[in-house]
Structure formats: structure tokens, C-alpha cells
Image 1: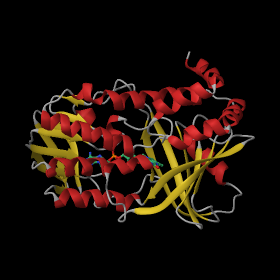
Image 2 (image 1 turned 90 degrees about the vertical axis):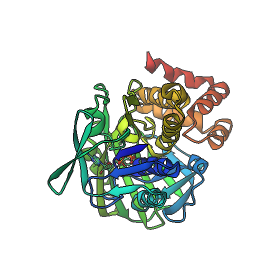
Image 3 (image 1 turned 60 degrees about the vertical axis):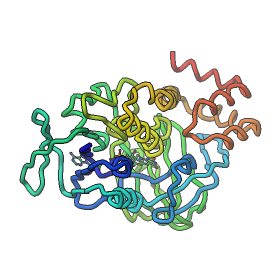
Length: 359
Ligand SMILES: Cc1cc2nc3c(=O)[nH]c(=O)nc-3n(C[C@H](O)[C@H](O)[C@H](O)COP(=O)(O)OP(=O)(O)OC[C@H]3O[C@@H](n4cnc5c(N)ncnc54)[C@H](O)[C@@H]3O)c2cc1C
């Protein structure tokens, strides 16, 4: 089959790798002149990434063993293993393995529209027409491709993430997260160390993220070495994956955990299913159900968090601080919210008080 992938981000390149490895003719069109730039990501991967069995030497920057969580008046530490990657090297790694399997990557090539069955790609001001058997829309949160194929759900919402690479003094293996309505209403601010003297510091909100970011870093004595920002989609349960011969994956399909806005691990799981369904003629929505259930669960928790008062955050931290609850958090990664929530509710029914925010 002739496969065209729009978007040479990690998800497009991983998809290209899987199709090329299966012997198909793959072209990846990327509108930037370099894979992996500009960086718009903190680069945190949960240990669930181990399931994909890739050697991480090419892109691993740091390994985390603890997450420190601050509410307005409390704090706690939870043991969690996370990886911190360099997003430029990470994206380039997946581009490299896709090419090694035979995929062609065209840089400075932008998909602009579709005319009948033809895709119109612009390169150096010239339009060229491309036809194929399968189109993969992997062109990020604002996906021009999904829109052109009538696949972009109109009800979708986005967060706006803003972060800086900062110099300062940091605990090298501890990610710090800060919750509360004065810090980042509805979500959290993060300090994610590359090492003891460099960290990626940021937050994401639906609006006003820059003002809250400036307030968060003010007076901490850190020095900004690079600013980064980007759009992050909020998962939309009605976002379809397929229309005709077009399939939408990754941020383009809003497959991002609504609680943490981590998109890479869920998108990689999604892509494995999409490619398997295309190659083996399986029902995509049926196969996608378990991943959709996880994404939906994250969305419900996000809806609750959006309504939290500062008192709720303190209460939540108080409940989680109990050793019996900490053990549950140490057992499950954030990618696996259903057993995590079920176990936590069984051990501490007072968590149910927050469910009222869903009504
Ligand atoms: C501030 C911030 C922090 C984040 N932190 C994390 C984190 O710690 N962990 C995590 O898992 N996720 C994080 N995310 C989310 C993560 O970055 C995304 O989920 C991930 O990049 C999705 O990959 P993708 O390939 O689907 O999309 P993208 O990485 O957006 O790649 C899409 C590619 O398509 C190209 N493109 C766009 N339009 C066209 C077009 N018309 N023609 C051709 N090419 C096109 C773009 O140039 C880009 O290269 C963060 C996001 C932000 C903004």
C-alpha cells in the first residue's frame, strides 16, 4: 500500500516506522526544515514507555524517581519512575528508524488542502499533487489534514502550554508539581529537572497561561535560557479516528491524557492499534475501546480537578499522604488510571466526595 503521513513528529514517524517495517511504501511530509524542532514539550515519559521496548540511549536525558506534589498548604512525595527525554533527539530517533525501514521523509513540505482524492503539498512555493491508498493525519493539535477530511471534531478544546528551560538549583531526580487556584487553576505547574542545575519549568491552561507562568517563576532566582510554548489538545470522546481512507492519530486526534497533558505514550498505543487495524482489516473503533476508556477516565478526573477549590487540593493531598494510598500510587503509572482509581476508592471512600463535581 502507498501510505502518506502528514506530520513528522514522534507520532507520524512512529507510524511511518510501523508501516515501512511491514513492507509498505511510506512518505512522511513535514512542514518544518528539521525533525524535532522547535521543541514544544517537557519530555516526560512514564515508565509505561518501557512497553515499546526501544533503547533510550539516543534521547534519554534524566530518570526521575519521585514526584513532589504541592497543594496550597500541604505537600507530599510519591515514588514514581519517569523518564525525561530530549524531544529533538527523541523525534529524530523515530525519524531515523522509519527511514531505516524504507520510509521517505520530505522536509519543508506542507499539506495545505485536498482536491478530490489528491493531497496538495507545498514545497518552496510550488504545489504538488499526491495520491495514496491511506492518509495518516499526524500533524498535531490543529491538524489541517483532519480538518480537510472533515475529521476534526468541532467541539474540541485546547490548552496552551508555556515553559522555560531554566538554570538554578534543582533536586535532580524529583519532578515538582504545584496545584491551586493561585498557581494554575484547573491543572498544575511543573518543575522537571534535566540535572541539578537545569530544569524545564512550565504550566498549561485554557487561557492566561503566560500571566500565571510569570507569576509562578517570579522571585525564584532562576535564569531563563529558552522559552517554549505550544497548543495541547484536550481529549474529545467524540473525535473520530477514521473517515474514508484518512486516519487521525496523536495530538491531531486529541489523544492526550487530560489529567497531565502527556500525549506520547497514549498516542504510541493508539498508533499500534491503528496500524494493526489497517493492515489486518480490523474494526478500529472496537479495537480502540480500551484506550478510549482510559482517555475518558482521565477526562472525568480533569473535569473534577477543574472545579477544585484550594481546600479540595489540600484535602486531596491529605488523603493521598496516607501510606495505604501511597502504595497504590507507587504500584500504577498515570497511564493506567482505571485500576489506580478503583484501588484508591476501595481503600479511601472519602475520595468519592469529589465525584459531586461531575454532576
Ligand atoms: C508545553 C508542552 C509540554 C508538554 N509536555 C509533555 C510531556 O512531558 N510528555 C508528553 O507525553 N507530552 C507532552 N506534551 C504533549 C506532546 O508534546 C504531544 O502530545 C506530542 O508532541 C504529540 O506528537 P504528534 O506527533 O502527534 O504531534 P506534534 O509533535 O505536534 O507533531 C506534528 C508535526 O506535524 C507537523 N505539521 C503540522 N502541520 C503540518 C502540515 N500542514 N503539513 C506537514 N506537516 C505538518 C509539525 O511541524 C510537527 O512536526 C507537551 C506539550 C506541550 C505544548
